[in-house]
Image (tube, rainbow, N blue to C red; front, side):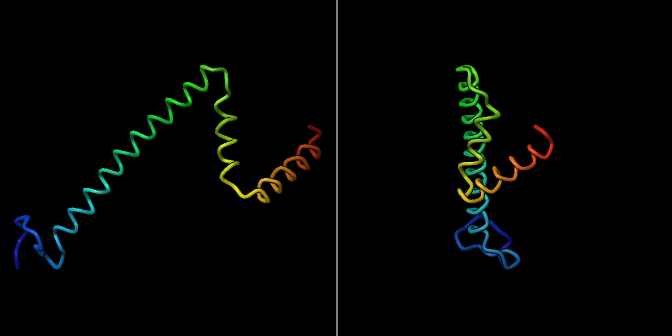
Length: 88
């Protein structure tokens, strides 16, 4: 059994080394892209704040837009009921 010299098709301990290396490389690239995207998103929120928008409210709107309309309506109804129950 080959102990992993990096050649195409190398198998070490029953593991296809080139396939494993490829998977790890792809995940590392995606993590770097995610890091860059996170930075870009922070920049957009900074821009929104400097334009006078409330970033917390924008984040809530984004969260709501990801939900199903019926789910949003149900939450808003419950929120209204709870507010009235508390005299708000």
